[in-house]
Image 1 (tube, chains in turn blue, cyan):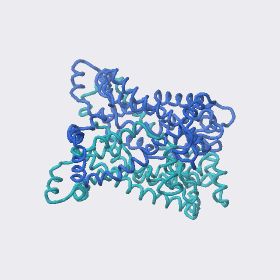
Image 2: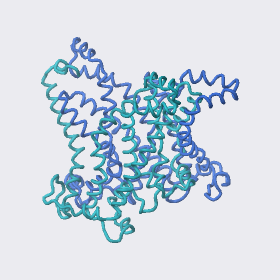
Image 3: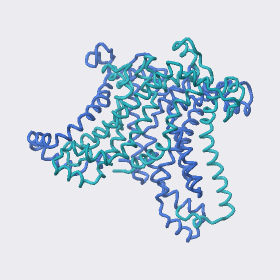
Image 4: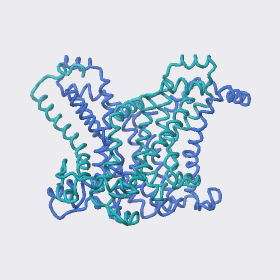
Length: 323
Length: 294
């Protein structure tokens, strides 16, 4: 992707600049002054809110004290990382984060593929469009709304789902949202409810692009409906699935902060604590800026590795990766 | 799917599959929409009805006391106005910054363009993270300021790249003509390019507006003062399991009755649902533009 975005003309324009930097740079600045002026506010934004925080990551190697600042705070090397890896929280954070990631890959990732394939087999186009319109809606609702709906539907006193589960498995009334063992099922159910419908769009677009002659040819060869699906439809969306899988695995550790935070209560933290929410808890609530930055940095670096790793894997499997 | 009747042979198995397929999809559509309808019905129901009936789509007796209470309460009206204001101003700022930055980046001949693009793309792979960003916002003196809900999210790098690709696809002839007529690049942008971009401006205005309206993380991080709460924070405070404590601090007069929880969810959702027809049209387009590799 990065190489695609750097077209030859721009490179050609830069080359003479290396030989005679002063003249060319000044000429360019004068000649394209309006374009550079338009670029400026955006550059300031990226410098202040993206690159300044990257510089601020250095406090992960300090004992940062706000009144001493970035330059005045004492350097402590890898102290906070050692504390993280040897401390009591690391195992639980890693386990919870990885388990949620695994559940996402196994249960949430395939759902839109399956629903898109089902919609693709639906012949009644008005019905198809109506169903699509309905299942896209939750994508636009905030996580606070989704969390509130969950609390209302699972309420011990009157929640309809709580009463339904209760009538199925019996026993005494349970406050599901407070139970650690119900935390992950609830998170997965929320993700499925919110994102499945919207996730179908990208696959439906790929399915719409399938050459209809291929079905014709398959039928000539005597393929029934299932074999057409297996030999034409599935191969047609395989590249899309791979790209989406690469994208998803790059963000495996990004357990949605808002969602997890909203569903975390005093009683279910043993299952709910993940890196993202732990960073908030340690940094904002406890004021341990350096330690929480170190935790965030660790997570960020693993994330970068995951992106490049899954891209490499996609290419090894003979698919086009992202970059 | 150009000719479905030819595509599928009408065997028994095929028909059974079709029936099951429709049934499952309809079930999915129902479980998507039913919770929302229930909350809407519940917001017009009496306390006793919410407590006694586990599920209903039509209240036995319509009561509007919850809404009357909400619109009489300073807290609610303030949060609603705050959210509308921040969303409106924020969307304008975000769209302006995104489009003005995307335009020069669409000019392949601009020296330094590749460097800036790579710097932008790098932010998609790696970010400073929550705490360093929080410290920057704090050092800028933006804590407890509405700008903290807008500026840190002013440009979404994904949207920027999509808009840039869109500008690259625009026919260059018009721009050339304007330039020959003596327009500078900025004049070309405002007089020629932006009027041509109305649909995509609408699309990204909606993208950004929904993002700010739904944002919970920014107010959580940057807003302490309860008089500056947004609607999402209020929804959270009212419906979270430990709502009683939070509200005791807020306004000693009221306690969250169940109806209030339903009504506040409805109010925070309603604008999204009103805009939904436009959202669906534009967002689907946006997703597909975004998926096209440059």
